[in-house]
Image (tube, rainbow, N blue to C red):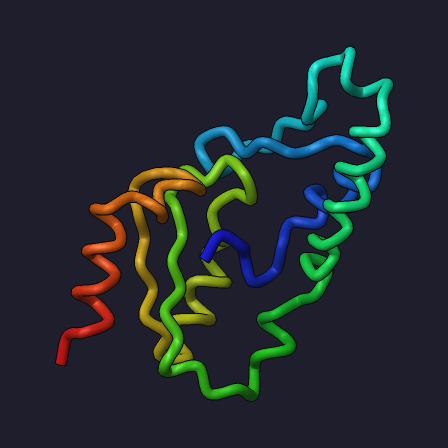
Length: 129
């Protein structure tokens, strides 16, 4: 939830340069500064860059790493208009479905996974027989 299987590497390159990518409509990448210009001159930029290194797992190609793993008990959730990481590519969704993963698409963005409506939908999905 909230991360693609094979992260678009433009996200990683932007972070290495102290920038972020915002995905318009979940598809079109736009590189931008994460903070207003006056904050970019402070140590906040360095802290942001260091914290963002946690995203370096995004360089892993999970479709390859998980190809021989049983994923039938996994639920994968994504936002159709995820501005933070972009929506998953079709081949990622095909990979998940081929491995019998329950794939849930939400019409919203990255944070729409934290709404009460979504949590109810997820609960109903997880408790169905």
